[in-house]
Each structure stands twice: as C-alpha cells, then as structure tokens.
Amino acid sequence: MPADYYETLGIDRGADEAEVKKAFRRLARELHPDVNTADPQAEEKFKAAAEAYEVLSDPERRRTYDAFGHDGLRSGGFHSRTESAGGFQDIFEAFFGGGAGGSPFEDLFGRGGSAGPAAGGDVAVRLEIELADVLSGVSREVAFRAVVRCEHCHGNGAEPGTPITTCETCGGAGQVRQATRTPFGQMVRATPCPTCGGDGRIAETPCEVCGGDGAVAQRKTYEVEVPAGIENGQRIRIGGAGHAGEAGAPDGDLYVQVLIADDERFHREGGDLVTVLEVPATIAMLGASMPVETLTGEREVEVEAGVQHGDSIRLKGDGLPSLRSPQHRGDLHVAIKVVTPVNLADEQRELAERLDGTLEERNVPGGAREGLFERVRRAFR
Ligand SMILES: [Zn+2]
Ligand SMILES: [Zn+2]
Image (tube, rainbow, N blue to C red):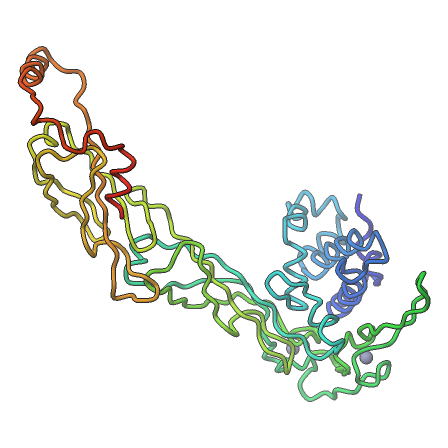
C-alpha cells in the first residue's frame, strides 16, 4: 500500500493547487536521481512524489482519492497510468524541460552552476507515412502535449496587476549555498533556492490559471513538411516548436521521427526500389508483355523470350528521389521469379516431354553455369 499522497508531498489535505505544485517541485529538485546520489532511496522517493503529484494535481482524481483512498484510484483504472513507462518523466519534463537524452536538470545545475531561466524541453513525436509519400514529400499534422507559456500572466507567474518581489531567501540569485560533510571534508555547493525554486523572484499572488508556474500543458499541433526522399527513421527538427522555456529562455525543439510503413510490393535500397515479377516458365521461354506495379500505378514491361530466374529489368527513373537532389529519381528493378507450372495434366505432361526431347546444346543459356547470386548482384549493380 503506497504512503498517503499528502504525507508524501508534505502538505495539508486542504492545500490548494499552487501548494501541491510547489511541494512537488521542491521534492523533485531534492530527490531527482540524477542529482541526489547520496540517498540510495532517492529514486523511489522521487517516483512516489511524482505519483502523488499526478493524482493530487488532477482535481477529478484528487476527489476520488480523498473519498476512497488508493482503492478508489485503482478501481477507477487510474493506478496503471501512474505506473506506465515515462509517466512521471513526462510530467517532470513538462515542469523543468529536458533535452533529448539529457537530464532535465542540466539547465538547472549542470551548466556553469547558473540558475537562470530554464530552456524549454524538446518534444519527440513519431509520424508514419506511406512509401508513395516519399516520392514527392508530404505535409502532415502531428499532435502532442507540450508546455506553453501561460497567456494569462504572460509567463511571469503572477496574477496580472499584482507585484513580483525579489526572493528574500536568496536575494534574487535563485541559488543558496549549502555545506555538506563528506568523507573528503566539507563541500559547499550551490543548490536552487527552496523558497523561489530558482527563479529569484516571487509572485505575491500566483497566477490563477497556471498556479504561478508561468506555463500550462496543452495539446499542440504542428504541420510538418516531410521532404521527398526521406529515409525510414530519419528525424526532422523543428526549432522552437517544443516545450516553452521559462520567461527569457528559449523554447525547446520538436523532433519528428518519420517512419515509413512497409509496402509488401517493394523493397527499398536508398533511391532504388526492387519488386518481384512472377513469370510462368512458359512465358519465360516465349516472352510476353506483363503488367508490373510501380509506385505511381501499373506499367507494362516486356519480358524477353529466354529470360532467366534472377534476371532483372531496370525501369529507369521509377524509383525514389534522393533527399539531396529531389529531382533525380532512382530506378525500379523488376526481379524475375520464374515459376514452374505444377500439377500437370496428362496432355500437358506429354507436351513438356516432347519439348524436353527436342532440347539441344543451343537451348542452354550462356550464363547457366554462372552462380545465381552473382547474376542477381550484377543485375542490381
Ligand atoms: Zn499564469
Ligand atoms: Zn530564492
């Protein structure tokens, strides 16, 4: 049974939204595993605080918790949400920002020890497109949740028309010096001011909309231009479209990872495409015009008499453009798969036997002794 959420955050049951937020911020700064290496329980405590915050910051879930406790949240199906992967990381980053891969605390602690306004975190989203979209590029909307500057207070956290004062604890520096005893002697290090949370300034009356945070989480959309020729898994960076930074600091970036849906008709090799054309053995002997699928529709190709299994026909310019020169398209290689007829009727068998009896040296293809793989390799070169 998890501890009482109010106890975990160290607040009264009557604490308002701003107090809940402030308590979590303080704990998060203290307990984040990247920062607190002294306390082996820091990570567990941090997760507990994040879970408590997730519930108490949501009015509906808080009401459920107040009335029914942890059991109420479980039966409501809420519990799994706080345990889902990335749950607390998400709210954490929403508060403090956090670079892709980097610690969200870098902005607060890592860079030169300055506790200035934190830059906004980056947002990563995935976007799936069709292979045909690679041909000429595509414009797609992505939706994501991001921290945006609070419009009510313009990001300064104070209710409009109320004063903002310099923090008395840190004198506006945003940091306090703390001495700790270590096996190597006394160490002094700067930590963010517990009173103002590193801002150096305090809104006497916190903004009603954002609770003094200067930012709110919101659903955002962005129209992404995916360029022609993009490769599966490539990321598009859109500067400044991520989480809003604190007032005076830059916004984070939006990274859109483009995933290209599998198209079972084609295999992609950079700008070239490979498709397989099944040719009955008799057609392979006689030759014929056959339909082949391309990215832009069906097209007739001439299968020449005597074509061999593993041969390929190159359709120049029916591949994909390259990212660097979108006007140049690669080729479509039509790989021939000779299919041998099965379940022959007596009459068919007789015909095949008669044909077999007539075959002579000149019917053997010149490249017959050449390895199949060598022929395939040569065809795609
Ligand atoms: Zn506000
Ligand atoms: Zn302060």
